[in-house]
Image 1 (spheres, rainbow, N blue to C red):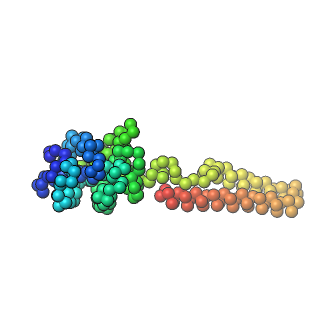
Image 2: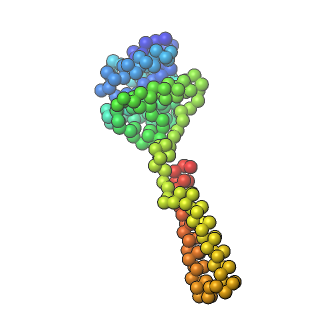
Image 3: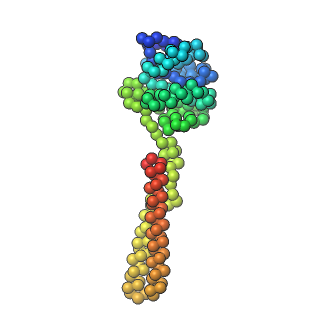
Length: 219
């Protein structure tokens, strides 16, 4: 197993390519060492730009997984963005973040292992890395709107819609019964039926809005 970082050769290409900002070298070094300790050969530009462009391209192209280390510096790096985009297109991208900022779009639609502020989601990254490198399963895409509970909903979730619909049906049946038994005058019955129809229409509109919201949220 080749040590993490370094130039490498065509005969000794890495399992994992780490894409990161050069300004984060100090924080990336222990990450590379940890991945290497798990049995993966790891390559990253540990010497701050001393690796040639051809060597970087060769290691990037041949790596089974690309791990992007997101940070404030990485989000502003055109190289990190380009490498991440290429890896995403090839279903090789895994991600971790070492500060509190989310990755930029569209990378925020992928799983991100958070290693900062007391969080240590190494298990998330290691499981995804094993699946990608050893089991050759592509990374899982998730919808953070659904995961965070931000999926659009309407006032009156399904239970309220059911109650409102049942109430409208009971009122409709009661109005018909009262009309047939002579309890209500025709004009009163007409008003009652209009009210029932209005409630039914609101329930139908609410249900349609909910279905549209779920579809837009990918449900």
